Amino acid sequence: MDARLLDILVCPICKGPLEHDKKAQELICKADKLAYPIRDGIPIMWADQARDLQVTPGTN
Image (cartoon, rainbow, N blue to C red; front, side, top):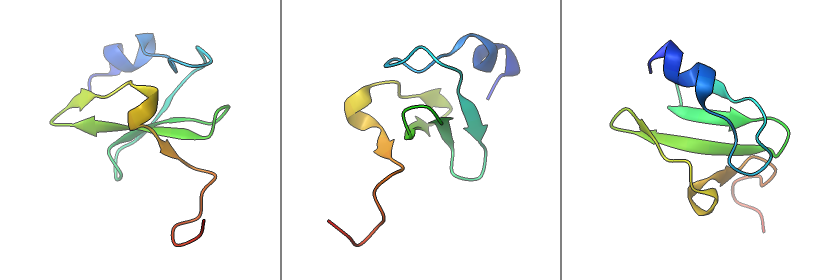
């Protein structure tokens, strides 16, 4: 992902900074505990597409 793009992208919910997780191909918002996917090099910045980092896989 282009570093210049990372500099201007913010969380669409809180407008806070995002961290790039290269291995998972996600942009992480620590404030909202959400991970936005990057698909084919394109960040998907829709809240309904974000993965909730507070939910433990396999639990409800």
